Length: 302
Image (cartoon, rainbow, N blue to C red):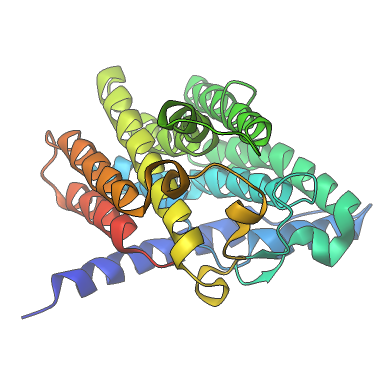
């Protein structure tokens, strides 16, 4: 009998490779004026990552469609946006991390000035890619505009940026669980929620279905952040591909710090149960994969 866990890992790895192929196909950077920016962008974008956000978009699409190649190719915008945020997060003025995805951070390779500009360029490049690929697949203009609007809001001043600002403002301060939840709702959850909504929207889902899957993404993001905080305490740099203990070094509030390690683990399990409830209307393989992704989050070591 085949191992179900091994089958799941194999399916997700195939999706990751499909995203990787789409990423390299869509992201042909035609930068002739300042080649160093192209080099810095590609250095960060093509570093081996889990590609979780595009995979979530694809799985959301598979709840409604069998052929998700168009969504897969469009979903690379999510990885580009995520990579832009990583470049900026790693800067000395932010999290001051010298390692990302097992390699020196962009600013360690190219300097803070070029890294900052590479992140800026990545943000604008994301919209260029989405519009180009969306046209290629014949998506309605309003659908692409709605997607750009939603993604812009999820990463903007009322989304991911808000979370980063709150995170910086709360350094060296005592916060409670409510404040911590707000920080990570914006910093992490908004883009995960938008990723699920992105895949559902491009697949013709109803507004109610999009909303429910966005909520799934929010909960997925919270579990991701809780386990990320736990790994910062229990993991090691070689496994994580980034420095362990960085949150404590930067005096950031984390779930283990606020709740304790055991209570943080219990909270992640509770969030997992609530996220699974949102998948009850769906019974196909994609819904099973989304559940398994939740279980993977609880057990991950990277």
